[in-house]
Length: 469
Ligand code: 6MZ
Image: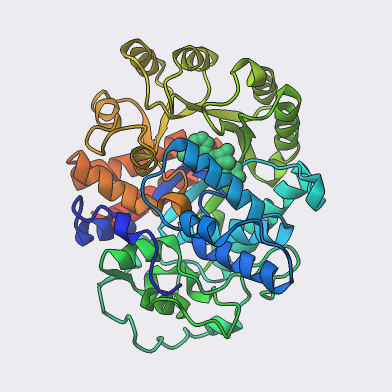
């Protein structure tokens, strides 16, 4: 793949490259990102290539693969077919760990300082996978990425430099900083047991979403802004784009410890209950989440095809989550479902996602509940849950002072980044820079982090924002 994908769908007319650049500099908090929806399309291709070389029958046809990476509008139903295809490809612990590592690094590259990633634990006996082994693989991938980012953290926003298109794009990589290994000598963001960049689990030189989106919009991330500086583990791989070449260059950076989580990004995990799951399967996920709290699992999410299942199926498991001290967020109102949304509001989760299709009464209930809402502009527009960006309910809720946080949902599937979501919000709702800063600042309050972690995060975000003001 030589060209960034999804670029034909980027709403160039909505915002300027300068606005995107300034959103990339913001220290951001991502609270609604599905792991397998955030996968790099290139990674799906790589995994299929590996399986093909190993003589395996492929679970996805050429046409399905093309659809998978096409970007653009998709009905919600098509989205869920696409997720099933992605799941058919990502069946080994190495693949799952690799995806988790890459997703963490992609968010870090986009100046996300706190990430709450969510994923559905999958029991797939045909692959020897249990919900537990699946989740362990995700956690291993996250840990591997964090170890590598700690070794080569991104620059603080104040130290970042974003260059206009063309600058440094094809030029030679700057020399390695004193005392730091050159890119190819650094460990890959690897899966379990393969810190040295083992095949399959090791990360390769495909561009991050931040780079793909930036490149498609005429912006090249400079090496300084790219925490992926050390990500090339397969030394023969040729960077796919100039931006990837920049990414492969070693970058000087502040030493570990300059922010929470060692100076780079704090990552927490939520375990999702899929709406296809029955009460017992939902409870199994909650019990797993409860056991894995020491490894950074902080909550539970209810997601999946909104046309499937009924609230009564999962309520008991969600009650158990609450008792176990887990926080809960629910996908609500992605389609018209007034009874269910009413029941969800009455249950009072700590956060809600989407709430696109609420009638006036439910919208009033939502506002009076003051439950923070995760809003995913591009996802909602591309799946036609809302008709257009300017008509997105962000506008009304934001004007009403309701707590909202901008999120990506499925950055791989929808070809977006959190910076891009900020730029779209700024353009569509005419938000001044000060409002973007306030959105970033307030998002810390809606995290499921501990109070001590929140205090650290507040400081970090305030420091980074102050450097931009
Ligand atoms: C509801 C969604 C979603 O869990 O395999 N998921 N659920 N609405 C959406 N809006 C577009 N986007 C993603 O990631 C993929 C899974 O996340 C949920 C679906 O259950 C999907 O199968 P994981 O990492």
